[in-house]
Length: 292
Image 1 (cartoon, rainbow, N blue to C red):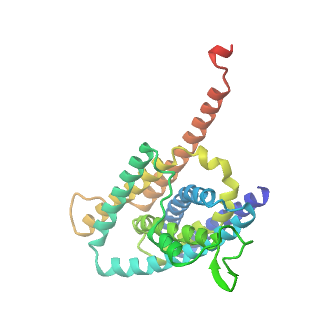
Image 2 (cartoon, one colour):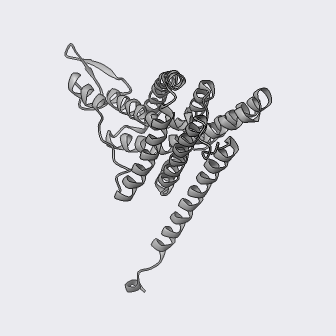
Image 3 (cartoon, rainbow, N blue to C red):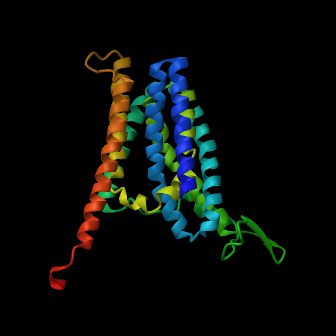
């Protein structure tokens, strides 16, 4: 736990140092865009850890191998997000109307997150098409064979559950990228800042998974905070698109406002979640009237 804490602190400090460097070399606006994007992507990554935890539990991954699973999954996520960013930047430069689509999609996602949370569906994991295809296409061993992803048994090459888990982590994070990439493009149009914010947000995610541990279950309001942030960025995207189209009443929201809203939201939902967990714990410790 102590080692994980040191590494998480190091990676966060590295991101802060990069933002400060941007401030001195490129100005406050670019630095503000980086920090706003980094906080947003980091917050979404923390939310992803809930699903990672469920995947690890569902596939009964031994703790000794969870580090490797997370490392491979995060590297796959970085590659896939890089491709998404390149495609998104090119598309937005050519088709400006996509800002309206991204904005509407983020607002829809925000509403959907709240609805799922109210129904208690936010902690479920449904196997996606890629994972189902891998299960059907490749013969799989019954149990783990160390940390190997493939093994030869009786002259026949088979995959192990380790590969299945890695595919589950990587493909799930690809689906999360559908939310996070439009969200950060709502804060900056610079592909370099978009990529670096994503890269720094993914750094240390493996250590953060083990550091947070049971704390993940205590952040009960984080879904509402992320929904608010995505909704805010979605509205911001639409307003900025209208402003660029010379619609007089549409305001242009400065980056410092976005950074303040995102930062304040995450602080509020984290503190509120921890306070609720403490209150619930105290209620649980109080003796039942029949026991008095």
